[in-house]
Image 1 (cartoon, one colour):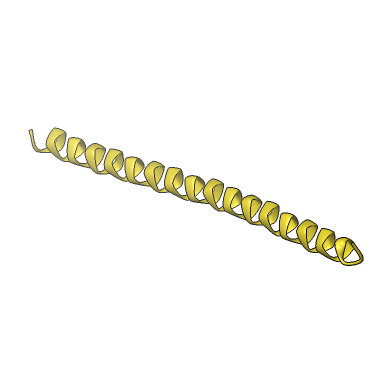
Image 2: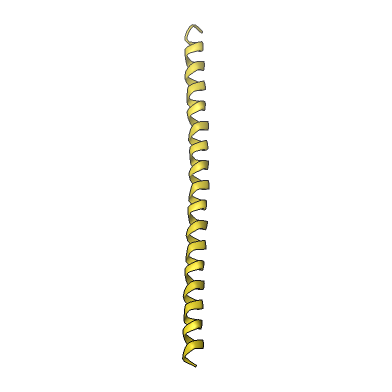
Length: 62
């Protein structure tokens, strides 16, 4: 019984670490998604620019 507060404190600390880890993991997921979306936008933009350039070349050559 004398050690109960110590164990309680350890449990609270472990719980705090678990919550913190979840938050960090959640932030990592959000950042990961943001990077993925950004890369997708850049890639699509690159394809569009390439397509527009190719279209302009075709229009000029005809």
